[in-house]
Image 1: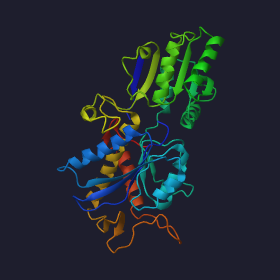
Image 2: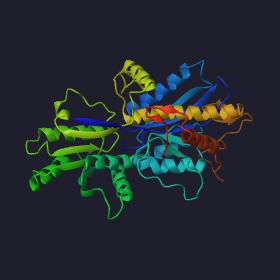
Image 3: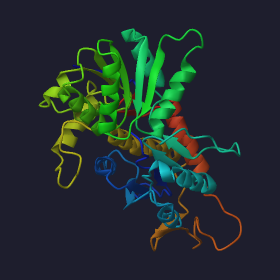
Image 4: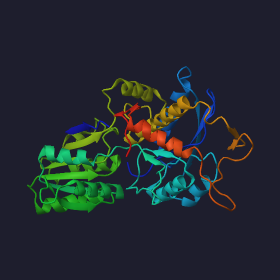
Length: 391
């Protein structure tokens, strides 16, 4: 049986957006995007958001122009080569390259938005504004509250990434020493489904009839395979197990025809609130997309990563709208030419690979970053999970 908990508000870093210019009304704002290979549904969500904004000709103040690159983002050299262009494509990066991207962003003061950070991100040592923004809400307290709600006294924590380890650390830090509502009995990092099932078999041999409450922090595909493998494994009990999926994986499609999903207790979290009209309208449009041309779409569900990417585009749109409402000619001295951005006097706006001298930060980066956070703080954009809030 599956329980889904809606949060009123996965890991590698899928994408970051780097807005670089804005022109007058009816003109274009370039948005850069770098996606990691294999992030098809997130790429589709990004492009769908761009398309929906641009087609709203009566309601929009500007058009968005996307510059997209799909690369192996574990290759920091390729990231560095991409970063030399002033149009700075947006970023979809793995944890291995996040530090490189984060450093570029803060050095050149170029803001980017991502569905979520791969690990704990420390603020700049300089004490200045951090130009990286994550859309994912912090929800480790929801994990604690769910465990307390069920009255579990001891849990088994299985994870497959540094992100899962960080979530465990946050859980530990939130517990009061000497007055913990529960104990983490066992912690294990798993490399694959076989590793997880082998570990569970060992637990079963030690205490077959004991109730086992397993917090499982891994990707949706791995979680599905572990559940199916568990149910099919004759040596593992079913009624004595209850899984809490602590990653945001319940928004992925859990096929109703897979009978194993209904044979064991599963609880998880969702951020896509399908009870709200704007979400239902989006999902109707998402389902109508051709899955061949728009990979990952054409279904009734959307993953948490893709949903947060869609929200990220419109949070940026709202930030630009606020800037233009306050000062409509804020960026009128910027134009696009020869694949790069220039001031009207012909000089480049930003050279990320200078031959020498000091780095010159982008003059609009600070303002855009602050407006992004203002949109969040005032909850002025209502996304998939309600009013948006950043980590």
